[in-house]
Image (cartoon, rainbow, N blue to C red; front, side, top):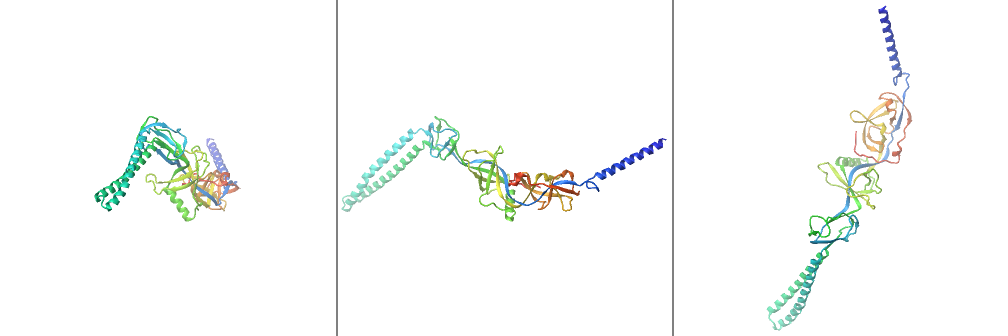
Length: 397
């Protein structure tokens, strides 16, 4: 009886196992009689896109002037409001001018004395010239008169130069703004003793409109863009490269700038090249030292392939991959080389061709080699339809 029970149990277990396998086989995707998965596809098509490069940078004043005294003395007055805008030539400090005024007056008197001496030596030479012809005076007296006259002329020129120097020093007791711009805080107060050409600046004036933005780009990316330009894969927009700014809070700066130059030397420590752009700054929204991100227009790729990001994944090696529905209606896996993001798209450099059907919806339902049906085409995301700018120009695989 026990043997009959065991045989019956084994038969029931085998029947259940076979039924389970049959059901599993029947429900497997792609098996005969099983429904084929439907997926949403994006038809790959080349388009002309403005290729941009986003780089970190900092703002720098267009002109910077450190104000230092050119004569020594006590500061009597500060003539400006800290943080205000000043015009070039406006007096900023008043240095005690008493000693310089006295030196000016002395030099002026010395010049008058020299000119008085010249008034007597000149006519004396003229008289001696006539007398020496009739031997009324000796030749030696005449030569002495000529020499005295020349010395008087030299004394006049020397006194005039001394007066000019005294006038300059007197003028320098007014410390003027060398350029127009915004002035910083004062490093001295009235009563402070300053010396001519001292190392410490009294204050600083910075011209903020326009303003520079200095960014760095790797020499590798610079060479890559140059090669793409030379090969025709990337066409230059024409004229100076246009630059836009993203501020630290993520907002876009209202004014656009132009690239001025790229440095001729690569930093041996970082391998980067410095690029400088010039921006209008009429409202002084940009201040020196601010962190910004500059978006540079690198050129136009007339045959760019950009696909939705949801259609691109990464394999364990970190490579970009995508599933494509081929002409036979089967899923095919491709390995891609990407060239940065374009908003919510990937810029694909290789791995996809025009006309390919990229699977962007229902990716989890299929696997490579399995059949699938294209349920519906997926349009390009609205954010990219009107033209896009990549947030990163570095190539990735």
